[in-house]
Image (tube, rainbow, N blue to C red):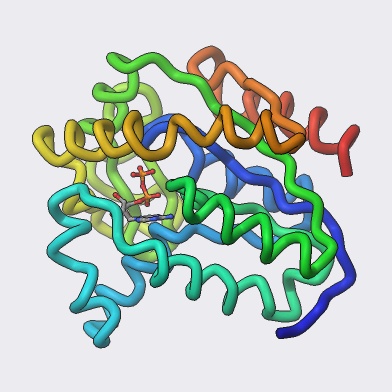
Length: 224
Ligand code: ADP
């Protein structure tokens, strides 16, 4: 195991559709740190059609969480890469109590301090956001057909690629993902607070992504 030089792990915490991915991408510039999304890593394996991708595909399509052991291993390998030595942004991890315990050990061993940002968005807004979400398969930019549409319908502003809907953004799967969140992930806020991790609540529903990001960046700059 590589022991790196410390730094902070910013944990973007919130329900599906709370804006974690969008904020993580904006936060990269503010923190000069890499964005680690377990969802993106898993989707890359699915696209590559490798053994890991084949193993997780059906569960992800149904909105279920993949196994703790598997994501813990993905995250450990990723944070030991050289770009993480001064800190990193975690998006979508940890999602269960077991993952939170594993993460704690990983960070302690590497002298990395966690800071949790809890993005709060109400349930109805989350459903509307997820069902209208579109993704550029080339550059990863996210759009929303209601609040942040592309300039030309169906095409990415940056590279003109045809936008896609994520396989798990259908209504029944969205409900399953929200259920997993409320049963398995939401309780972690209590765990973080009880274990002395710094946590901040951020209103993720008011203002543009950039306005929310400015608030987050201000909070982080005072912490790291
Ligand atoms: P969202 O937060 O909008 O659900 P993600 O891209 O973070 O989107 O996650 C998509 C899916 O990837 C999840 O529904 C789950 O199947 C899987 N996944 C991502 N991160 C984890 C994790 N930490 N533990 C277990 N499953 C995960």
